[in-house]
Length: 219
Image 1 (spheres, rainbow, N blue to C red):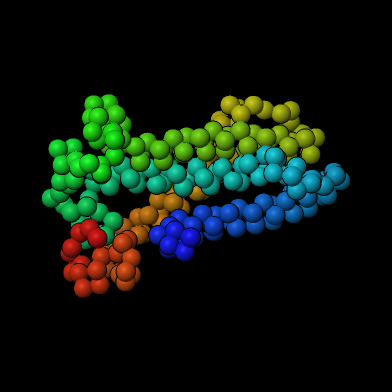
Image 2 (cartoon, one colour):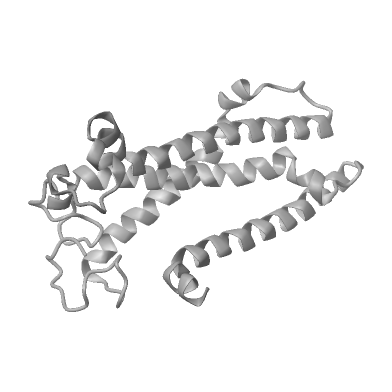
């Protein structure tokens, strides 16, 4: 068990932090939602009831959406674009790595490499495909959760009639929520790309070696 934890420590730490923060988000969101309900003289939600509310779904999936869009796009862009001196970029003169050539496959290579054809084509792009599919799923769930939250707000205020998820997709509210997350994600990645040209983090694969010149591209 100790060896398993050691060799999987990074994913355990990241997913463990995710679980902690999503639970805290749900608890604080539940409190915010109930404070809002009380202002309207409505009954408070139970915690489990809150987890199925539009308020929680919208807040959760609008953030997932931006994260997966950023990562999927970044994986694709780094396959074709370079930034001189950045640890986040492949070298300027590197069109393909030798190990990307299926002729260099070994017995330990993943099975799609040996099959070639369509299986290899899909596998060669499977990381960006998976991330962009997760973005698409989160986008849809954001629309559904956002429509539910919009309708809950309208019901509390006894205002306009409920709308469909498709109608919510056409609102400025939905796109405001999305853009405020998307812009921050791309700013953060752009900052990492540029800062890694001149700054270092000892022992991190996201950084060039401490002794590397600023002009060196790739980690």
